[in-house]
Amino acid sequence: MKNYFVLNHASMKRYNTLRLEVTAHTVVMPYSMDSFVDALRDFDDKKIVIIGNGSNILFSKNYYDEAYCFIITNLINDITYDGNEIVCEAGTRLHRLAWFSCEQSLGELAFVEDIPGTIGGALFMNAGQWQYTIGQYVNWIEVYNAETKEIQRLIPDEAFFAYRHSKLNEMPVYVLRCGIKAIPGDYNEVLSKMLEYRHERYVKQPRNFANAGSVFKRPKDKDGNSLFVWKLFDTVELRGFRIGDALVSEKHPGFIVNAGNATVDDMADVITECKKRVKDTFDVDLELEWRVI
Image (cartoon, rainbow, N blue to C red):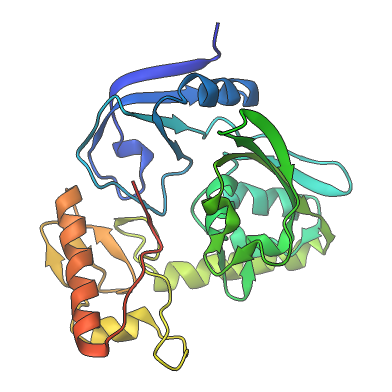
């Protein structure tokens, strides 16, 4: 008997932070690490899509047929500290990792407190903010290799992580758990930093609408200088641009939000227009930070 739930023709609205209403033929919910691995093996004839918190993703279809299998990892979330490192499972929410670290008087991880998402997704995209990224603190990553059908442990080298990217994207693997460096810190200092970071993001970001985080990676000009997406958007008058209920945020145009009942097509059309205006005016190609499914 397999220890996972299977849902058929299920709404995915609650499993994506943009709250887009799409339907999936097959949704699997494992509730232990063993059942997660079982699901990866049992459904390996399908295109498997892992959903953690559902942030940083964009659906491209209204219906995903039986060729797809969505595996929801939010119950795969054990987190422990053995005195040397923090070990957390793929579905562990980043804010929980930050608070767990703070409770153990461990420093350096305050920056993840208000990043939406889970550690599994964070490792694929090397999530971060300010001058910090999760890749700076990873000791090892345990993965399931879809080709060999085996579990293996990866030790990242200096080239493993890059800006909003990791080598996991080029490998046929699914993240199971990882080891995070435990750096001694002061509880009160870490708590203060977490609250400071949260306040800054709440002040600047459109928390009143459903969104999936920053839409585009920070681009560079022809000389290699980093550019701010929101400044480019303001120049081409994209702040407040809207198609249906997909809206370029007026508070922070680096975000495209769901202002009500946005559809998959609404989101795609707004993104296309944003890319076009920036390309036409600045000859800059915008690259999505979101993962398109």
